[in-house]
Amino acid sequence: MRGDVRMKPLSARISDVLAETVRGKGEADDPTPMLGDLVALLGKRSFGIVLVLFGLPNLLPLPGLPILCGVIVGVVALQMLRGHDALVLPRWLAQRRVKRRDLQNVLEKSEPTLRWFERVMRPRLLALTDVQAQRAIGALVMMMALCLMSPIPFIGGIPPGIAVILVGLAMVERDGVVMLVAAFAAVIALIFTVSLTYLILWKFFVLLPRLLGFG
Image (cartoon, rainbow, N blue to C red; front, side):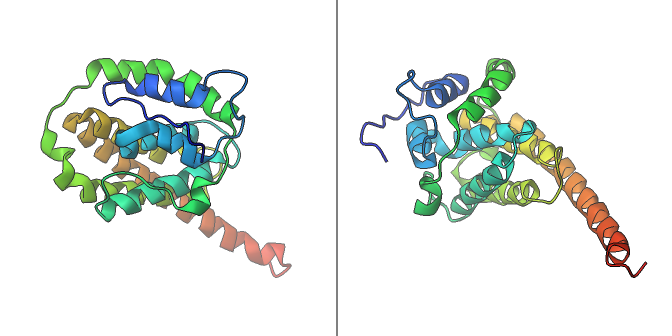
């Protein structure tokens, strides 16, 4: 990773941090930055803000990116379950490159909504977002990571993506009310994913004999 990476201050707003991280400083920026460089720019709030950054692409039909986001969310969840203080990507993932333009497109579409959340969120019900709650939050995020990697095309990443974004926002802003909303969204996403995956697999096994000429 580059040696000039500078972390954003904790006082910066989520949308501003993401905008500066994703949009870069001009034409000289690498159009395909490494994930490790992007995460390093996010600073000490990396758990929550990385969840926001890589939850957002699941709301748009960007081929390939949602699966990668699911893997990243899973790594975040695993480190939270282990009680880590900050996110450190494994080398094989940190050196993975993403298209800056894809992330820019996602941020441009979502920035007004992020700014609305920033206006209404505030620290409350702190027990739901403090260090003691980290492992429980990690378990919730891990379930959403598995949902993101489910074999549901096009819309499959939307419900768990929303839940992941809400968890990230709640963590960064220490808003326990938003965390409760995120938990509810996660339950809905889990039901949605399990139900649709079951239907897809059931349909596949019903049609398989016909495709093989046994029907």
